[in-house]
Image (tube, rainbow, N blue to C red; front, side, top):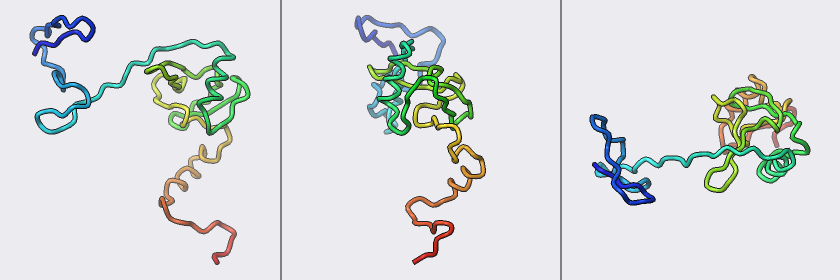
Length: 147
């Protein structure tokens, strides 16, 4: 199948001998012939290098769960365990909005995954206990009598 370039509408030839990409010819978000949704490709992230003051304002505005007073504050990624400072967070732009990523390029952690060091959920035993609690039920608080 031959596609057209989205900007110029000129034909873009398919490389000879290569299979057509999966979902090719089907606009993202539409339904394919087999009834399944067409794959939606995420938009690319353009890296940005904000100044320290802009970086601090971005973190303060977008991290509603943990206040930032300095880019030198430490955080721990709950996905990979890396400890870092705010000025090490990778910041990019996708669709005009900032995207925050763990400094470890192999990790997909973002702002909701960054905890303040000393957070009890960073402890392995506490985390496993927390994950065993059923959602939507009330649990007795240790040390309190029910009633």
